[in-house]
Image: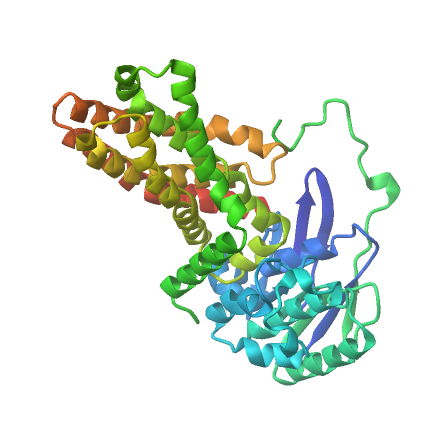
Length: 214
Length: 226
């Protein structure tokens, strides 16, 4: 990963950010709201292209073949991406089909096996987050990109998350997470994104082009 | 690659069909709209059987076109809003195939029910049973084209404000060739002319739409998650 620059609209959110991680490493992305933490994760996931710089995986440009890169990455977004009308197991079917993983095992490791046949609309926010984390496990990918994984989790689940992180890193996996609260990731490196000074934010001009249609 | 592309496409189809069954009211909405809109014509035009019989092909086609538009803005909109679109792209399936799978799902949940409802509607309007085969064959191809072009337009306006308003403005002009050929085939059948060429043109239009719409829609999905 080197020198990532990303514009969001007309605004530069990430200015030449760079880091290198080895197998088993963990990186915490911190910084004020709007500093570009989530944007950086989406670039690493291959969901958006950086305006400048490269994402390198083992020395090769990772974003050249985004389908292949998707197989290396498990991405947890802000949203849990659960279909409320489907049961938990049905929600995980697609990810299981993509990776060949076992959804029941993953639900068990996050203590939600008992909820497997409930429709997602009946779950609490924390339970939905756990389901989304189960999908991360299910992907069986070496690189975990987690956008505030602790959102809505109780203390027990945080402990559980710690063991899952440790097991993943033990097996040579990499964890990159954005967070505002301490996560159970011992020896994790921290990358503080500075965010922008108030004065750097361009004021909207009268003839500012609308980036949406209509 | 860890997965088989067909099995992943099947998984997306299964998921969408299951959702369509769970939210049955949404699914039925388009079909009910189709039947109701078609039933309005006799009321507005007067009950002259001759007039209705002559207008039946056009009525069925236009109503099907409009009804298929109804669920389009949710096709990708719902996926974008709850973050599922990110997860779909992270399965590693190329974006154009994801779009194609969703378009197939749209056809199975909207096009196919419309096709089933078209027969009764045509009979109600007094269309001779002889041209029923032409109507259903034409509509079969036509609804597929609608799903493809509609899905492409839906992915293009994805994330735009008031995409729902923009959608018909994009879809309807693009589907006019299908409407022309489909209605022309029916006209030919009713007047005893050969209707084969019109349906073949419809088929050619469909064959061109499959790759082009899938590719354009895939690019639209990629742009929407940026």
